[in-house]
Amino acid sequence: MISSAPATRDAPSLAEGLRRRRFPVADVVRMVELGLIQEDERLEVLDGEIVEMSPKGYRHEGLKGAINRLWGRHCPDGFDYMQETGLYLSEWTYLEPDFVVFPASVALRELKGPDVLLAIEVADSSLDYDLGRKPGIYASFGVQELWVIDVPRRLTHVHRDPGEHGYSRIERVPASSRLEPLHAPAALGFALDDLGRS
Image 1 (tube, rainbow, N blue to C red):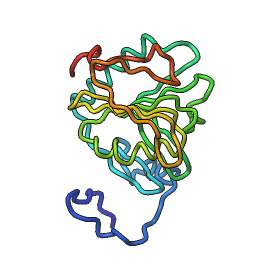
Image 2 (image 1 turned 90 degrees about the horizontal axis):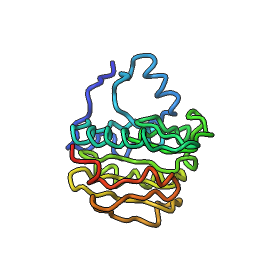
Image 3 (image 1 turned 90 degrees about the vertical axis):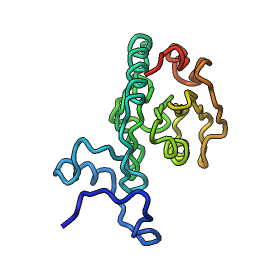
Image 4 (image 1 turned 180 degrees about the horizontal axis):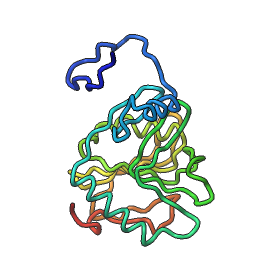
């Protein structure tokens, strides 16, 4: 019998250093369909390994709501954005960014890394993961630009120029400065201070 209880976070994995079974994203989707994984579980799949996501807090959700309202008013024709959509980067890797911006000519089910003009991760309790591993994953799949918003410190880590080993340009932008996307429409830019506090 398989227990659904999560592993203790502060203990090393008992499987560390051992070969593990990788699951294609399609198999993980099927596990959800069969009820082996609950639909409301927050998961990502990194090179075939299932990773639990941190719970969301009020600041995280409040900021996402503010961005969603702003973009709903200002997203120009020819472009689209999605909030918390599944991003199937490969057969083995699935992420769930807080926002993605892409050309409206690309169907959501066909969306791949190079089609993503801007991805945003709103990081509160997940900051180490969102700043540590995720930029390298996004860059290796060709996501054009990544903003990691550090909610507690009120600043944004802007990642540009993706390559196989990560983004070659990283800039920290304070809450008072306007964030200007390089590839997505300028109308989607904003300063954190203009969105208010959550």
